[in-house]
Length: 203
Image (tube, rainbow, N blue to C red; front, side, top):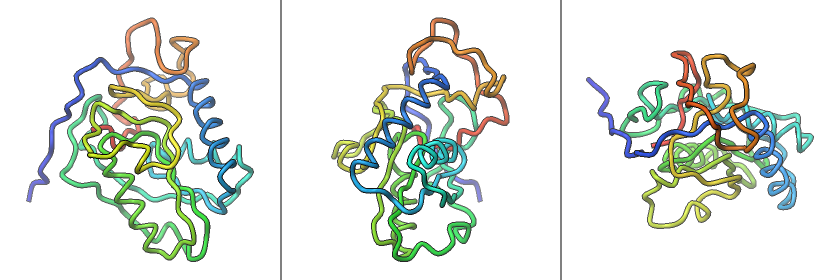
């Protein structure tokens, strides 16, 4: 049976985040989280959420970092269509989270479906406290009646279009930064490589 897909609604040109921007945003998230009580465990949503999860964990001094694989887009391309619902694999990779204070991290939220589905799954494991954090929210694809801040505990920035993260570019982490600002560049936007990790909820 073919999985139904939903076309993206993003119309604006994509923007590219730089590594310096990612560092700034993860520091912002770490400051927000730390000011609200230190978690015991950081969980990154694979693939894109794992990198900011590790960075936030380092900035908070947390060594217990775990992961869960969740997919919502059909391909890795810019403005890729998404499946009808997020799907997660190998939930046993989270281990025992009962009674723990957990921070769930992803790179981006669009509709918020990926983060919400994963939040419910983690909450069902008996955690003592569960918070969510994302680097950015794509408001162009947020159609929930309530604001992102009502559903996501910590947000570093908002945008109105598709975001290309530095680990998604064809040149990888060594790609030359396009601008000094955290979110935009002066040159053309590079396209993600075929193997780029963009299984995230942007649309």
